[in-house]
Length: 242
Image 1 (cartoon, helix red, strand yellow):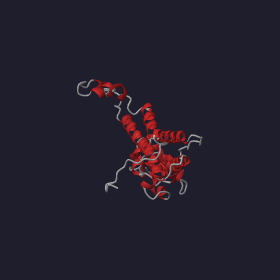
Image 2: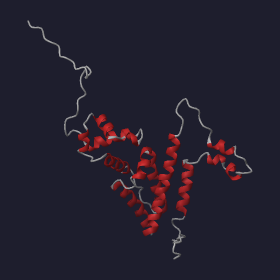
Image 3: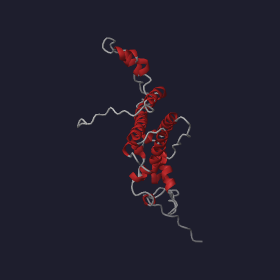
Image 4: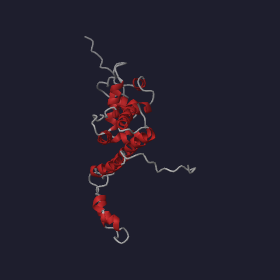
């Protein structure tokens, strides 16, 4: 009986079963977005075409059948995140509804800290961003606030949330890795300043230590909303003096 010859292994390919690629057409846009969001949790820079397709065991062509570029993928990913915004139910108090809107929008950013920075570069990634604006404008419309004033108030809340979230996200990422020395707390640094030169700062050193907290956010939002129901009064002076 003739002895069988064992297969010859290529020196360039390791022994063992090769990782199979998915069948053509089996990768969906939703699967690509799922993989991209998992990668984004490590930071938006981790989202690349190579990383996404590798996670899905797919070829780059499978990716490009759904998204023309990486930028298109990021837009879709941000639109997906903003689609999780839950508009507050309407009540008889439209100013309180506006507060609920601000809190709901901020919660989206808190739940997806990796999305804050790319949202600055993609201010309107899709229809879900428009729907968020429509929700705020609808609340303001019920209060009789329309036009430029409505846009300014809505923009002010959005700017507060993005700025606040960017600051708190930076605080989290700036924390030292395990084993590294913890830097002095902000409260201790400020309390140690010369009182004769910085009397007001030293006096609020404890409060400054809580800079960026939920408590301070609530105070800032309250102050912004305090003037929303006041009669329209613009203090902006045009350059031509009109």
